Length: 67
Image (cartoon, rainbow, N blue to C red; front, side, top):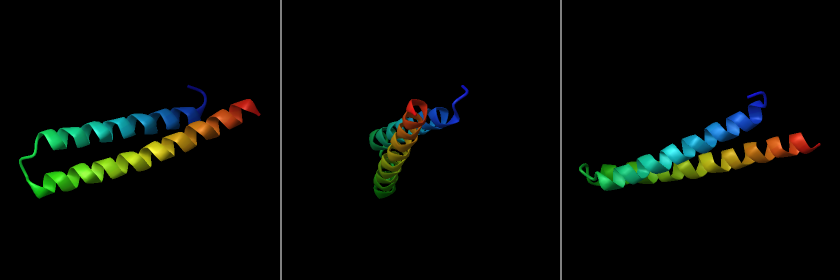
């Protein structure tokens, strides 16, 4: 890919999806009790931040390609 901003946005989107998947996996495998719930919440919060970063990067790429 030639456009690095688009590539970084897609990488961030994939990382957000991975964080959501790991959070769901932590909820399914709850063998550590409160620590598992903490890790699940941490991954949910992290995925939210990563999704915002991905949206900003993808919007920046769209603006750059239009003008």
